[in-house]
Amino acid sequence: MDKLKQANLYRSELIPVSGKLVERYNKCLKTLGFKETKLKSFSIDGMGWSPEVAEERKDMHYLNHGDANPHGIIISPLQKGKPVYLPFHSFDREMMQHIFRTHGSKINDITRDSAICIDFDQDIDVFYEPLDVLKYDDVNITFRLIDHLEDKQREQLHLVEKFKTRNNFIDENIHQQILNSAKTYGDLRNRDLNLHALHFSTGSFFTRAFNGVYLLRDFIKPIVIFEDIEVYKEAIKDTIHDVLIYHISQPELIDKLKDHIIIECDLEYMVKTPNYDRIKKFELFSCLKESEHPIKDILESKSLFKSYLNRIDINARKQVMGVELYLEKLERSNAHKLEDMVEQSFYFALHQPHSSLSAEHRDLIHKLLINISPKDVLFLYWYDKEQFYKNYETWDDSFKDWVIETISNNI
Image (cartoon, rainbow, N blue to C red; front, side, top):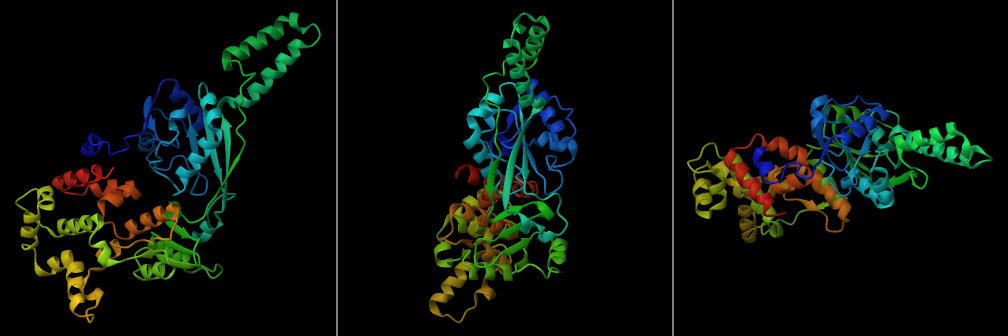
């Protein structure tokens, strides 16, 4: 990952945590019912998730009490607008933006000397069956402060009122109680520590529950798409819910998404786009078994690209150039079938969210499409960073150089 880090493409916007902030973070973990970290320094994202703490715990989702009960931590106003690097739901970043948009000034004040624990409550204690994800509707976002600061504020205000009553201003015991409270918690009298609960409505989304599920319910009919084949097999036994159920690898899924006006594919348009160029180059890289030149040079040089295209066997050559060959033959005759000439995963990779979709839906469908066929390295980085990082580790070093340059040129 060193090359990615040097190019600022690997979790580059994490916030460093050390000193007093570690103590506050641990108090949040304890308040939420988790074990404290033994780390003296680490980093966090916009939601309070830390890759170092996750590694320490051997649990990427250590801020969850099961799939149905995720949490967040705010210990710094610097978390505002920062990426959520391992979202459990596709709407997690939008929820954090909603929190800072509503309570931003209070968060700035509170995090001067305290920290905020966040509960994301869907009124679901635990998931039992795959289609329990259909219960997702409104998320109730509630907040807790470490050290029960709101209670300490009430106690402090009560002491002040007591001090003002009758002749209590000469009571040294009350003096001492007020001083002890002020030394421990600061002057809380005029601080607004009330973070009222927020509501967030979910529509279509992706969740990591049940090893990955897409729920598309803002269209003609709800569609549930599972990434895990065993979970999918369990889900299709359901006879209660009126939904369409697919596994992400089923070819029929693409046709259904088209029927529901969720995706589209205009090959004549796509072959002129940078997307197609990236996918074609990825396909050639996948077909090369050995090369005399660095992969990066082969993909960037037209002459080298053609040279190596002619070195691979005819079937692989047709796999790389199938779309262009199909469109060329289509100009002369419509007797040719697309499925006979264009490799299926290549064709799937060229699909796009339908132009009628909102920006929010487009991002979700881009993520779905790149998970169906992860051939566009730029889109994989944009829409599923964790999968990108996993795939990146398996690639040739020279191909990694091309990938880094491709992403850097499009930021």
